[in-house]
Length: 74
Image (tube, rainbow, N blue to C red):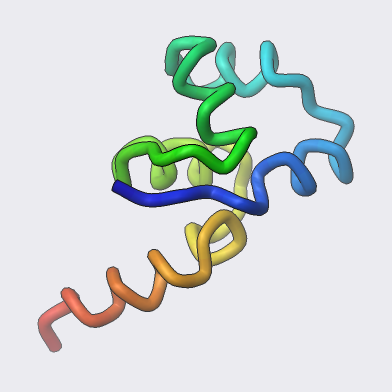
């Protein structure tokens, strides 16, 4: 499980509501609320949110991005 501690700030900067994130991502409102409040959410959830908001995963969770980088086989 991953934690998003930066989603709320990105949403505030862009004027995006939780409802808009739900609409863009197709995730449930409770899942988006969990991510917004920095609770544990799946890596897939953070990847989906990042893609739909046009930000990198590292913008939502820098630690997760470092973990994912280590999984990439070169």
